[in-house]
Image (cartoon, rainbow, N blue to C red; front, side, top):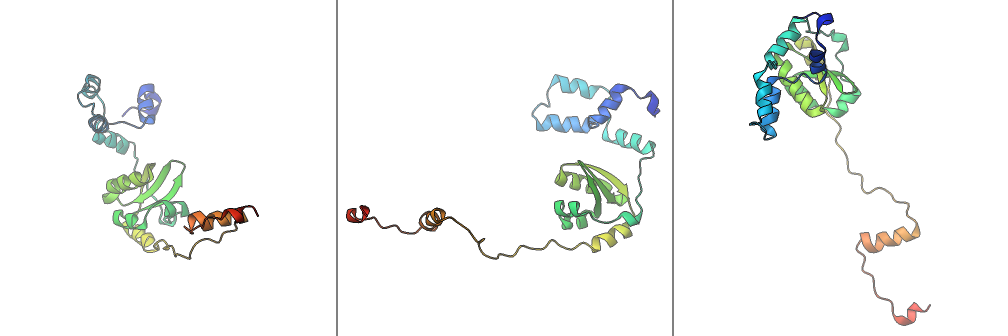
Length: 186
């Protein structure tokens, strides 16, 4: 692997741009109806890294971040954005959401599906950090389902007399009788 000081500017820019892999480009060209594009074929014929190559380079840099169990708490922001059932199903826990990055505690064997599911829900980048499965389970057991809404009737209104008449006649479908011509002059 190339040391950081000798990394080429284009390589750094490619990573900053989102680290598009060979699979990403193929998938995007197929969904966009551009699978036969000579430009895309030319790019795919070059040394665009695959997902596995990018993951291997990331692993070679010592990228398996570990998380102490004292940090395994669901933040209120994450609780409002992600369904607890999804977290239980994927056995992961978002411990912090900072701008457009979610820091997600995962166990090693469930990392990829958990990251894919949370990224699909949040539409944010996800940074997976390893935590012990027992610690994640303990934190997930503390999650409570979101309270269900209770119907308490319509909201009270403080209408002006004009709006009250409008509500009576139009919104409540009140039947309006026509005025006789003699009553009109009054």
